[in-house]
Length: 47
Figure (cartoon, rainbow, N blue to C red):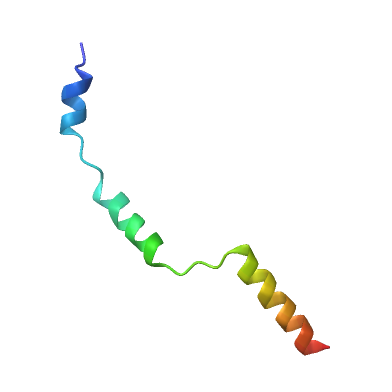
């Protein structure tokens, strides 16, 4: 039978997951408000 407590003690997250997590945190992501503001500014320039 599997001893879940022992298996949890052995668990270590994958390095790939940790690297991806850091990259996501460091990456400057635009949210929808930033995109909408940019579109409005560009449309105002055209007018």
